[in-house]
Length: 595
Image (cartoon, rainbow, N blue to C red):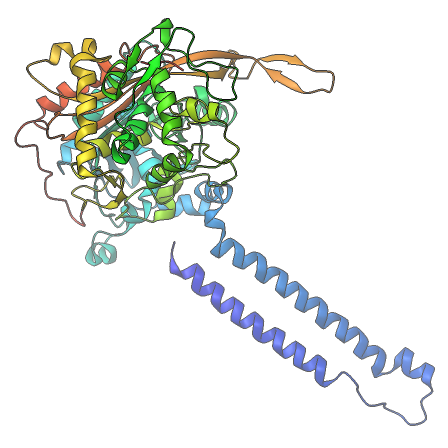
């Protein structure tokens, strides 16, 4: 935020307080004025004299002081506090004055991690004084790059880094040019991996999907979401208004939703996913780190019945694994084993480790978004968080959570609310040699920002071994078989059930029934989301990732094959070899199922 509005507000506040003091002092000094005539009668003094006049003046003084206080209160709120209000931030982004200021100059280019001009994610052009923005990735990168428009404002990186992109690249340029050129920004995205990820999601043939790909210091290499949209569609007012309204009404089917984050590309939370069996990675990590790793539980045909519950937890397809330990249970993704393991670990242990990852652990916690998640070096953090801060990841480990609730969350169902980014970060914790939590970032060559410890290095190594067994002989072995001998990796499949609203052809929820009290109930349908998280190579991980395909079925059939192709692409670009591509120099300015 510019310092000018704050300085003007301080001047206004001080001047108003001075006026109030003067008015108060005058009211006190003249509270009992002398009579003007000894022979004046009492009635004359009341009707025409200074007593009546002074009464009116005191009333006016009080009125003006209250008016000033009211104006001060509102003015101070909107200047100093309203940026934390999502509705105000959205309105500010659409404000005509802010749009004119943002679009009046040649904003900087947004370059991928190579720093090469031909790999720009966003670039400007000036034709006879008419400034336009170009998006070479088109729909493949719009959830990252966003858009910038004189009428409808901006979103994505265009909004998150707008202070940096509009800051003149040099004093000379600012003085001599009628359209100062803003600073370029070099981000961590690899344009080739981003394009590959977007193409894989667009062609997987199942439905909506998302992927996040990270480096060891948690630089984001790629973040893609489908369905997507052409950034130039913002130039068509009727089209843009239609999809914007749809996004507000039905985010589950909107292309404006960045499904990797669970937010709209214009900012604000949208929705969560249930991670299914990929969340068993978290339960296994806690078990390894607390020494509860040698437990044997029985997987029975009738399922596992948590204490106090009449609802058994069973395995997908009626599979019965018998008595088994942690390694076999993880490799086969046994629901009954991890439900019992979660209860064995207990509420307090699970809550302790969940908080290390920044999870909200009680339904009474009103935290809506994780505003401290990202490492931000360029631009304004409030602007950045408005676009990229995901919804706060949630578990219910409160005293009101039943054993059934805890058992269900231990297999990634129930109150387990996660995002694709959150699951990619869980995979990166396993991939980190020290088992620490590292802040994600779009800043190229960023210093590794350790947010805190999660598990010990020994536990992290054991967890990587469990995840490698899933690839080499477990639920992901089929999807990864063609990589054997060429590329090693570790991973975890997941298949998550959830109920979603049914929409009509106009994007409106379909009414199921209206009860006798007038309450409306809408139709829902059961979906099965396909998940895969992991890292590569297996021994010394260089990348970590998470993939989800909505209603894609088993994780091994939809999400895992996408992850395999992404690993192949990363290997072809040199990321998984002994040496990986180094970013180039910046331009001017720094630029309830088991599988």
